[in-house]
Length: 524
Figure 1 (cartoon, rainbow, N blue to C red):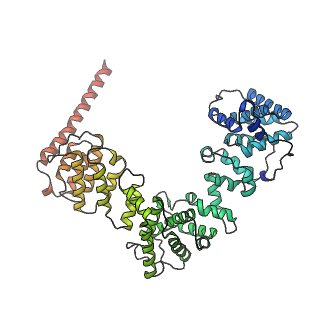
Figure 2: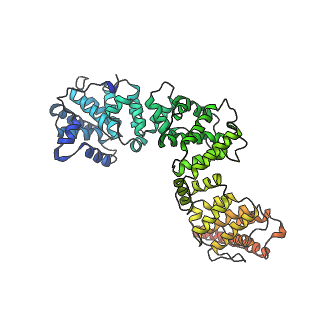
Figure 3: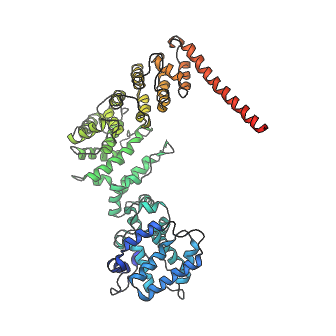
């Protein structure tokens, strides 16, 4: 028998939690009790507690409730049931003491049902289910067992703050109710069990909200070749083509389908391309219809980024000659995609995010303009860095922007520009000296650019000299010099190298002196 098929006791028996909320002694509500128990639950009972007295008191509270069914006894029973969830022996004893001739009194079953249906506290759910299971009063329903399993998971506390109501159970089933409430295990199970025969409600939920729960196209950093087939199967099971073929769709649906397609497009750079018209016929149709729906629509930066990725991989000038339909048809769709980024609201969002490297979506906006406007990644990033950090500071390094800048360098001219900004930033003189050499970020900052400059012999000699004078950047400077032509070495490099070597010898001598001191102390 399913928990959804339980019959409540006659209407004249008022729900314990209805009574407790409206008429609770001292003005206490069920939600207030829940919150109080949540606050003290973790440390109210030390590990050294004797289970027998606690179980006896809990059993007395349950028995008192079965006799009086008052708000006070309900609150006491509720508190005892949810008080301690780490000690299995306590739950076992409570079940045994609460049992009367192996049968639960009807009012107690009602209390258990109310706890399951109305309590937002996962501890209550776990303990009630444990007691009912021990007393063989738990319905043999896979979904109820599932609830018991997930309610014992630590993630369940934060991700499902509210146990679905009885109405949700009846309408959607327990598993789907939990998925909608935010439990990730339930969401995974819903998506994995999806078939063309699944209910329309489940299909719509997967279309609108399932995107965040589908597995990543990458496993341990490697692209998973089965991902394409997985997503294609999901498209068919939800009838995505039929949904998107409607005359109009709302923003939520458009955004969700956009993210699905963006992930699918990642196959275009992993030897799985949309070049077989039969293999990707449905996906191409879905993509083109989505683009039609996006015409003139306002999108947020994450969605614009997803659209820019699709454009780059499948429709842009660098899409490796992928033909989705025909060159002419693809060209028309590419223009429609670019038009979405020119919608006034969308253009404003992109430009605003680009205005400062401190913007939340700066990196997404940078990728968008590189992919859709043809801007230079290096020029755009360096311009933003120069505007935000005209003086020495550590923020660019901590946000990873220096690494991004170094990765974007494509030629000698860009290496020289980036190096000059670093020199200006730390006020490095021609002889390599800087007042900020001991600044913690100096070593990392200079090292990153020195590693890049090893590809372009003779770039920014002042930066090389500064690296030799810095303990943290010395290795990068040495590796750069090994890669350079000796004719491009800075002036006075021999003396600077000798000084660096001597510095290391001084450190070695100091360590040897420390060893001698330690040995002398042991002798005395």
